[in-house]
Image (cartoon, rainbow, N blue to C red; front, top):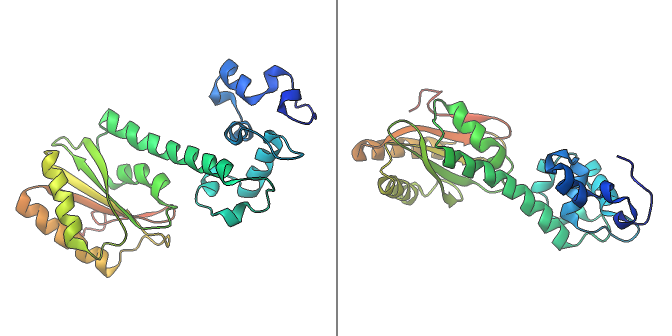
Length: 231
């Protein structure tokens, strides 16, 4: 792609402009810089959206690195207001949610802890707060739905357990898998995690809804209670 050195994207040949290229060739043909330029919408004083996008990618390297930043991380980019930053963060989050929704739509079958980890690692490994999710499965181990149960620690186990099984009964789920993240990046279970898991299993036995696993997401790694023979 030949990029002209004019004052802005409008000075470039039409076929070189990111939006026009998107509609002519498809979004899959755009580079990360071009995708980011479209999100930015406009550049800032003295810089086109492409130039600004290139500088942002040079600093953060990946979209993942951009997603969990605060405003202080963006201070060096003069003219980058909160609207532009919000658009970038929103687009990345939409991408994460898209995968989760796609999985529910196709009723993916779960065969191992790895199947669950592949779903949730990209979405949960960078979260700054602890988030707890429950995966509800039918008798053939296909996903019925995925629900976020709470944000915070599992210290208040009983209310969380009640909510999980209330939803499981509503969905006529045959089994469940629970997932939560450790913002520290360490996937090793705490004493509270172990206690919670045992209480969860006991409740499942009473209600005849099997707890297949409880998975803890860390930084690009996970802990499975089933794999460790604790379920």
